[in-house]
Length: 461
Image: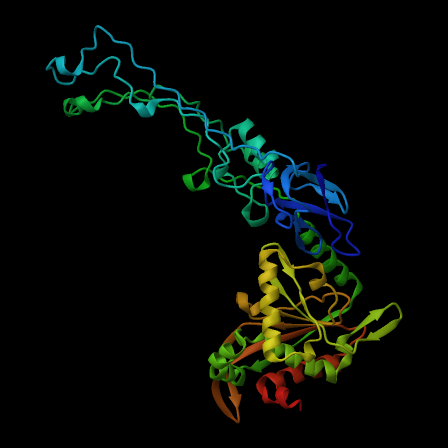
């Protein structure tokens, strides 16, 4: 049977290329149809590409390479033979020391103290070790593994910058170019300094020991071992990070962004969560978090002030009569904003399940481009990282984004009494081309009222 080509799938209408972030199977490995084969990173998300058939994998494109949609990056040979694992080279036997007339054997040694044999018998550990697999247990691409073998690099000392800390070719080249990196001393059967044989341990002189032979210099490249770190390192921006940077600059240049602030007393929400935490978990199989309250509150405010749910298209204002709420999720690959479709139709449990599902997919790298597209309004929670106050940036072409922050106990005045309450600062960034200040401030006051009186969201008043 003819080999089956592995082609880069289409992952979105506007996406024309991607980067091979990681091969999940090594070259020559047997694979089954539908088995995860590689991770394809685009400017919007990372997609896992399954194997198109069963057979033996042949990799034609290395990790880190940018490929066009539809391009072939390898093949699967249904009649191929899996590559056998390389057998470790046998360790050479230690060469015995030649007998010397001036070096008597241990049983017949003279009784004089402090005498050292001229040629002590080398210990078995002094034998030259076999060439190790410098990749260790860390998965490497064929190109990286070949470079590691040619340059005799210990991958354990190379900091990986690829997905999940994976070592890519650029990491190895940066390690080799580092000024602190010096070639390690070649293996030798002779000890750097001749120690006392164990049979003569009790004959070691107690005073004025002879100066040991100078040991071969050891290369110190690890920062933890005292070596200086490189003054600077370079790392290629991922496609996702490039896209984030591009969009953030675009929105700053094309929108008139303004931010208004308020604060909300979180007492009632926290009391409800504490009261219904366990029953909610048992009934719905998910935790009751703060985000569902803010999604519901934002929807109530969007219904009252529809300009925050609209967008500008040329010279027209497009009012969107549906509520697809984006929830920002931070991952190792960068910030992602999965969208909860028709969030106004979901219950608190439905919103919490959707958020938990998106967060798990974003962390695992299985989130789809469709999950990130669209959205009419966005909510971001910097409070989980300890942020007290910030000015969120719009997610174009949306006209508003709500920023949540850390809950801190502060003294506030309630009915002319100073009391301690758990307070959260809220920030609303909006496009002033479309939204007036009165609407933005009123929107945030509506969110505040819903949070401080969560029963209003349930009664829709």
